[in-house]
Image (cartoon, rainbow, N blue to C red):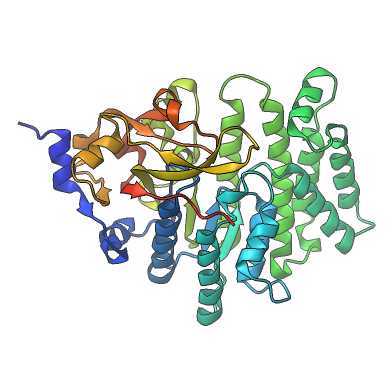
Length: 415
């Protein structure tokens, strides 16, 4: 008789008390070139702390050299400059994060947990003579990215054709006054698309790459900011359409940026990706597929050999969390209620109220191949209503390669 799901969890889960308990997980990563680290919320301290500890081990022991996060490229690039000593002055990690990540929700990256990790990266790079990178792969920074493109082109080639193309593309967005909703609506009603402008700009920059210096990764910065402008234009237009378009454009952009980073750093570069579970966990193992939605985890698995991509989900049973009651509302510390009955979270708690690790492999996958609700909390959250909208039916052993569970978690410490 096949064992029950509870028996399978008890048999295959490993208790986690300190970073040494991550040894089996580091071993399971093997020779993967891309490791995806998730989170069930954007406001849980333990998710950030343990992703940082696991990332340190992957950097030290496995030679990973790139961190890519669910954040804006221009903001994260300031962190990248800081940890690689591209910037001058006596800046501190905390001040830098508070000044760089100003778009709501600021707490996602301007927090104490990230500040500690950034300090470690800077010290590690200096001590080991490394150039570990920290990059943002999200799509929201259309205006900031366009400004960066124009600033750089104006400095290095003020009379060149590319700077005029950039100014022409940027002027296309002026009537929206930097508000994406206004841009999307104006496009739908009377404005022509700007996508041709930014596509032409990106193609021109790539064709003239030999004209641009890459000192302190200046050309990479120029190229990715141009890519953000192109894809953000499509994303904001898609916002007003129903369906999966805007989600798929956003996750497609993240994958395109990851691939550009891998191309830039060379075929042997190994990259760690920090994003929400809904991005890194294969969409084909959730009900997202029923809505024709894809995500980063699915696309990277489809584009690479199976052994090159390793996805690790993170979740918890109860505790506290940072979130907001509405978009752009002030954040607050909220109670994360116990996982609802017969969810993955409640099953993992029921089989032992302690932190644990599950590694899925060919020998035990079928035991966990069950469609069971799995919690997902965004930046906007209403705990009292979570049972009706915060659980995603998931086949957890197909969605991830491993899962880190924390029985009780605490709120992120925002700067």
